Length: 501
Image 1: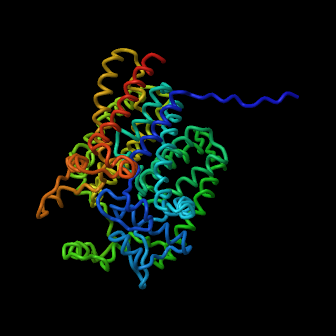
Image 2 (image 1 turned 60 degrees about the vertical axis):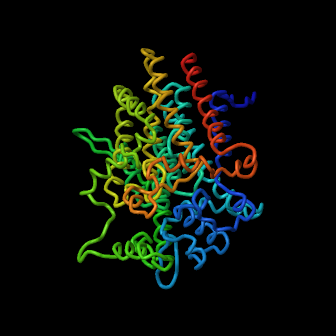
Image 3 (image 1 turned 180 degrees about the vertical axis):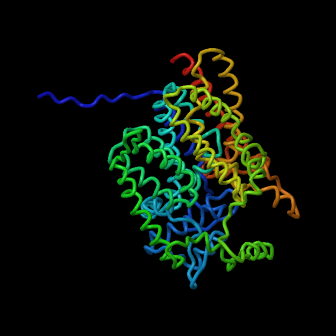
């Protein structure tokens, strides 16, 4: 009996792309000399790893889980987490669901052993972004996209959007995106026990990562459920494998209930329903905002979705210079054209309807959100899952060889601008205020990427630069080196993709 090892095919273009992606993420990891040599330092200054409470609140919870096996924060951890911290029965806990914090706990533990807990914990989103890159390539190929353009698409997902900036933090957006991509990959496969079980796990895990994920993942789940029904004019059959979806979800529903009981004391009341505690507010403005948020309606349940604000939210999230997805990443326009081209193929029509549902829900849910700006943030952080889905279709823009050169030139122009803005966010700060706050400051600051442009002229958040190159080259020169690496790859891969169909 002859035993043969499975054939391993190594794609050089994909290997080069992954190596460069790792290198770029390494060169832009956030940190200063202070935070590097003292990993226990709670530095919340602009450009530091803990500049945003979206990061610090989840990190504090990871500390509590790893150090004390607890979801309850100490007063010091709670102050560090503020304003994204809740309080009930004299106990403090994170305002966020624990998914990211739990997943990051093993990395924290490894880092604690090595003496760099913050550094290793923050590797989580960088790793997830690389896995998302691979999923985008795989999913695009499955629906008939060109191999090399799919690889470029995966690279652009990270480095031509605000994904780059959030790959360096400790927020939920990349994990949500990965769950969406895993779900899309599952529904591309045949119905079987394992696929249904895994999809149930994906949906349940999404709930533990961020509550709106239950809405964003809904098109995937509905599509998979409908695949189990066989209806004719004479028969109506249901595939029993549908039950495995529920089996996959149940452990996470139980975890959801258990976590709420341990924190808020109510099985169906997450911390978000309580709102922020004012214990650590120091200004009258913060207290006023808090008191306004505590005003409850006489009847019914208060939700953060305001349909009357939807038009404004759509403008903010699509085209505004504050958070517009097409302003920060105009290369996504080519992905939308690719979606239109792909939709002409009836074989992928159902799949395209699912992806359109995800993009639509992602957009409209946060357009109705009370804060479509995402607070102080860089670009439309809420739209990162939609960005990944759009980039799945980017390769189809180049499906026809007609006008291929002109298309490539257009792509390089749009991608170069997108990468430039993206690099600014990665090398500086994600703390860009919304206009409605910035204009009322005593000393007004920019509420667009202009803030990042001014930042990079004097300093950078790059740990590598701050440790190694601080006294050798300017921050502006360093940013140009990073940008040049991206553009060299972009030009080279575009030529390669055009000559190797």
